[in-house]
Length: 240
Image 1 (tube, rainbow, N blue to C red):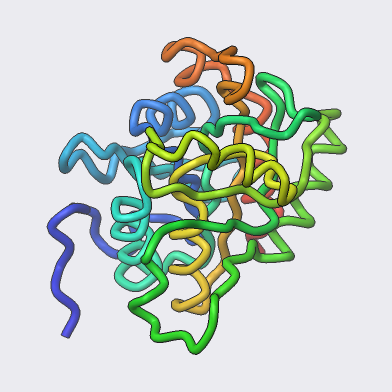
Image 2: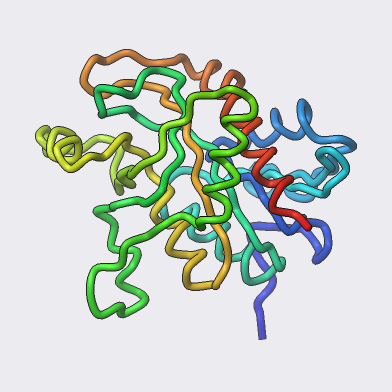
């Protein structure tokens, strides 16, 4: 028997098959109010706002995930397993560490390395490599090309901590070709893999780790329009 969610007050049918998930619930509100037609709020528990509306005639939802793998893992698990969601597209911020990645660039995460122990629950006999769903990845790249956004595709690193006591870590990640650092993607990809569902992470570079450049909190919340539009087009294309 499935225990009703303590974190999501939606009823079955309130949430679309495809959900966009920013970390910040206020970014979910922004997407709903600026991109969705006739959005209806289905969740306010813990102020983790969730909305369902239509985009170009197709039903799409958007909901905050909170910060870090534990929060993303909780909400993604429930969406996949309790609310019959097929696909989740993360739309979040990341810190750029590759020299070719600049502020406000869009990164589409093909895979996500991590220092999290989240995968230990699966008793996987080896090191599991969390990967994006190829169909969503391909649709996102196509969408970026259509709207003329230069999106970089490659690996990201999902960290369990925002402030790392090991000051050499970022340099080591960069040496292995990691484009950016963030805190949720690996957990989303693992949760999707276990559920047999689809997932993709589309990120905007909000700061540059080695130069110290960064966007304000208001910019992070309201100005990631390229990423949002790519995600919406990707979601729309994935719906039959």
